[in-house]
Image (cartoon, rainbow, N blue to C red; front, side, top):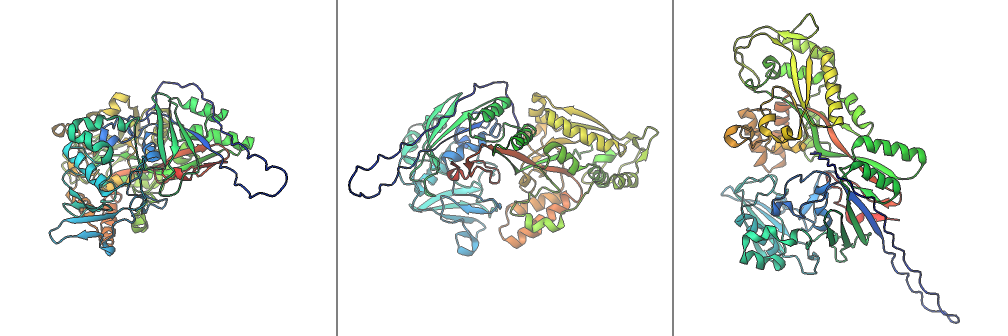
Amino acid sequence: MRREQTALSLAMVGLIVWAACAPSPSPAGGAQPAVPAPEREKTLTAMIQREPGSLDTSMTSDFGGARAGGVQHVPRIVRDGLSDLDESGQRVPLLAAEVPDLTKRTLVLNSDGTMDAIWRLRPDIFWHDGTPVTSADFVFRFTAETDLQITVGNLPRGLRTSVTAPDPRTVVVHWAVPFVRFDEGGIDHLPKHILGGLFEQDKDALPKSRYFHGEYVGTGAFKLVEWASGSHMEFRRNEQYYRGAPKIHRLFLRFVPDSNTMVANLLSGAVDVAIPEGIDMEKAIELRQRWQQEGTGHEVKSYITPALMYLENMVDPEFARPVNAWTVAAVRQGLYHAIDRPALNQVLHGDLGLVADSFYAPNDKYYPMVKDVIPQYPYDPRRAMQLFEQSGWVKGADGIYVHPPTGPTKGSPHDVPAVGEERFDVHFLLFPGQQHFKLGSIIQANWKDVGVNTTLEPLTPANQADVSYTSRRSGPFQSNPGGNAFYTGRLLCSSIPVEANRWSGSNRGHFCDPVVDDILNKITYTIEPAQQQVLHRAILAEIMGKAIMFPLYWESVPMISLKGVTGAKIIVDSATANINEWDKN
């Protein structure tokens, strides 16, 4: 989900209020036609914790803290893509008239094993300067990404072989193989009429252009008016917006680095909306309780995001300790049974969180395909100890389990060498911060109740950023990627960070299973829904059935707004996807 805090503080800002002038009274004598009252101009002030480095991090390669402090929510204020996810997790068109589909022959599986995705553009889309958006803008972006060797999201290089424009409103993306995630960032746009000349003169100058900072021209609901670095951004509504002009005329976005100052701004009325993720859930719960008691009408809403808080278990016998715990499926299952996830969630989130039982979020488009086969691990200390003892563990005199020496055995997923006597001592790496230590302490107490001794190590910022350190640990590691990472490549053997690949992978638990690799590759390159269902159910059985990882809860983030603000909400993982619908009475 990635939570960086800074020690900076920002002075409290006043709320700018605009009042509409009343219409002049009609002169006496004689009725005159009614003149509509002018629309009252509405101004809304929002805040985020961190200032973004760019409005297009992919083009500028400014990924440092790309999801920290709410910066990921800013680009959607000024730019839209071809499509996006709705609240149910289904993909819907935006700049496109429709999403490519096999049944409509706009998603074409070619006889040579390649695939074409045909995107038709809406006729009513314009850049903020009034220039029509055309297919040439999408071809230009692809050319720039290719020539500058820019990595697009997590797309494998060479997967997109070309982008063509048969006519001004048709974009064809040619894929080397069928790719199920073709609609998750396969193609984007750049204004060729603004940047084309610069690119022809000096390609390397393009990512450094002021366009991506203070001179941005996009296709979204609002236009950038001013970017005062260190202070705020100002936006005006896009009157030509294809989904209708936004209800808010003027939008200010303040940068408030300190979470306590963010709370103070809300309490004073200096801002109308706090965009996640600067105010943590604990402070949000306190605010909600205070406002409920005072009857203010202000709102604190919690939204479940696709970010999954889970324990990434070390399963490689070279590093795992105890070896006869983390390399044995039954013991991992017991450890998972021993975690009281509902109580953990209640302590951390009150009634605003959601317990996880797999890596498929309830609004994941694949969730309906798998929800009836998700292996269940209810809190059951007795069952946990039964599984330990069935795997050879015996309670010691101090109440901690001990395992006698063993010869080489067949492990899951790795073979296990001969091991001497082991005590059930677990070393648990945690994110820094009070909330994360609280999480670790609860699990530590749960495991102590079933005869497991746990040592907690909160990571330093340096260790947290050092993949070589977190990849050579002996026990579980707290992490929070998107749930879909587990069926899009995170657990591939090739994703294991090792010195040879400069510790660049994300599979830090060193899980490696050729069966799982095969399923994951098929998921990536299989388009037909019926086949997708079979594959997703299979990967769920392999990963959750063997308790390779321990899902804890879906990350919840608060969206806080003052009385009178409507429409502000999180859709999937975006707080600004519907910013055109925000209003202030």
